[in-house]
Image (cartoon, rainbow, N blue to C red; front, side, top):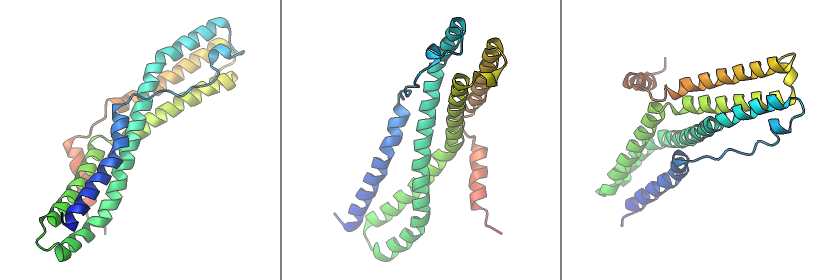
Length: 208
């Protein structure tokens, strides 16, 4: 094996190893973290209110698990894509010169350059097509906003209304708004071809 062949093997190995956490996140499942004392242990609500709040949270558990899974997989994908985009954007022009000068007749030199340029094009397309950054922000923000609202009701129910009925109504309304905002991200997961082309055109436009 030539030196360029070893370099290619090492590159592919590193690219695959850094991809493993991403693949694991996409396969799932993600387990929700323990939330500590909940409505059942609260002294601020009547038994009827505790039952309604607990049932509402139980119905949301599946949704919360889905949000956490989506946020985790898009976060890891975003980190993977940005890591390789930054690294390869700087390295590919240098590698082009190096392979042309030191590659000689070794076919693995040109194969290595082809693999790196294909890799950067692939991660760029994946990042845009799956709207990785936008989806990560949407699901993470939705998850965070729900738990902030959930904790605020437990810690200071008076901020939701003057009496128990107002507090529950306000809480359920706010949770419903959060769910609708995240649902819009669920239905807008993929970018269209025109959207991808506009993004590529913007990157290729020279700075004034």
